[in-house]
Length: 371
Image (cartoon, rainbow, N blue to C red):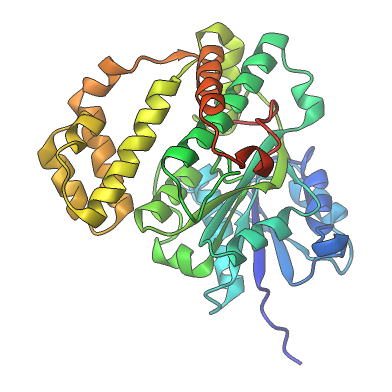
């Protein structure tokens, strides 16, 4: 009897991760669903590329016999033997395994990340609820977070709490029915899922020098595909200060390590202004031009009119944000502030005008998180 293709394929690019891959594989092989029952109907592919250590051997040793994990080694050619090329190769493998099922789910994480037992099920739930893609939470491994210098750990926790508070304020001022509160601020390859249909519609992983995961989510938004940032699908990742890419979590941690007091972020006034500007553009695409738009965006009316005519809302927002930054007025109007101050400001706005019943929907602003 022929074997049916899986409905979900997890793709994990790996290179020189012999010391970490075992924990990731064991967690991926032991995923559970509703009621803690073993999850079925999924495959995991560890795609080991250009590795100089025994990553593949360690992955196979950690894979239970008859389990969902497969290990494949390959050599990517020069120009593709990097993080972007590895992610693209892994996701293309997952897409091929799904065959012709447009609703099949491509999922990816990193080789140094350990998913929670119900991680995959939570991502599946988010997509089954109407999303085209789902982004889960990325947390630092507790034992590695504890080893960070005290000042770095403090900034990390303050920044995480600030990002979540800013998302809560944004969700209030510019609600998205497909990504309601509670949600989070992350959209990275360590915790990402999308349907095969969405993956094909955007043309796969974009050709960028770095941050291919961010670019992929941006492409989804550009096509007005629905992205859900679910707080329930969680992975724990490493806190290394020296990473494999020029931009990423390790870069951020290293920056905080070098000068934790220098970290600046948008204050509450800017967070609220951005949310209101996006909400105004969305409304104008439905109702027509509004003379208050240039004031909301601090950008020329001519560019904003083009944004209203863009074929998708995502493209329109990109045009508007480019105009906002290009005009130069926004930066002069809103100066970044220390993260502790920004967190206090945003929390103050939230506490000052909390909608009735919102507190019952959420247990409060978390004080621990990731980038």
